[in-house]
Amino acid sequence: RKEVEQDPGPFNVPEGATVAFNCTYSNSASQSFFWYRQDCRKEPKLLMSVYSSGNEDGRFTAQLNRASQYISLLIRDSKLSDSATYLCVVNGGGSYIPTFGRGTSLIVHP
Amino acid sequence: EAGVTQFPSHSVIEKGQTVTLRCDPISGHDNLYWYRRVMGKEIKFLLHFVKESKQDESGMPNNRFLAERTGGTYSTLKVQPAELEDSGVYFCASSPSRGFTEAFFGQGTRLTVV
Image (cartoon, rainbow over all chains, first blue to last red; front, top):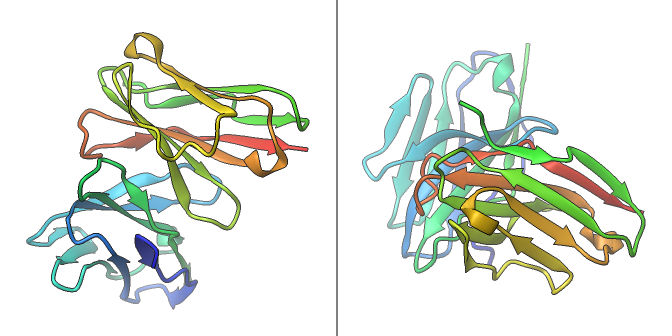
């Protein structure tokens, strides 16, 4: 089983839709979690950290479920500019090696 | 404030040649990471520096890869001799803390070995 797993998609949604991605991790001792966004041929950019209590930033909501070992990202009112690959990053659990998932591709169409 | 910069942005070399990639982290960031993305695969960890010390190099593929961070500032990643399977995008990231919080990536170096 991979350390960090994501559905590669693509998720194809119309503008204004709500879309959610999950990311599962195998190391139960993992301590910190992040969502990154990567546009085509660009570097990953931090979208948001994921806190135990869940957190929201505008249209984006991230949640952590430690019992089931997954994190989620919810995007409301999708915009065309949200089209990108969303990378899940998990850190901790005995090391400081941030581990990336393969990413989930989102395509928002008019 | 300058972000993480990497040089070169692209490099095409022949199998057997040597290439050196450079990363300049954000000033004051003690933690520097090298990652690699091979086409179609996930971004894979290579190694982690804390200042000038290698904290973890468990992701380095083999001894053809050598990373340095003299003086705890910029870092270099040398591949010698390069093989075809070394092709990919090499990313550098820096962060002020070990937990990867507030980590920023450089734009990457796209390496093609032919």
